[in-house]
Image (spheres, rainbow, N blue to C red):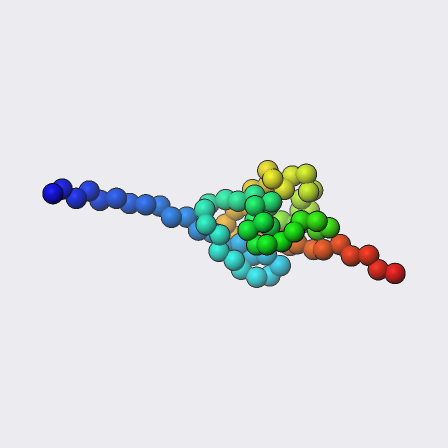
Length: 79
């Protein structure tokens, strides 16, 4: 019997969301998928990555990478 060395690359990255570090599988993820994976409903929310506000229309294309800081805020109305 011949054994072959098999090496699997398993990527994980650390992303900070609202000051809390999380670990995500893979080497990149979109904002939309990140919010979904964290159980965050995007309705009435705004997202910034670093110091840049990312429009909701870009959430499915905007890539979040290892080490990035994401801020999610919920819009509220008050009177």
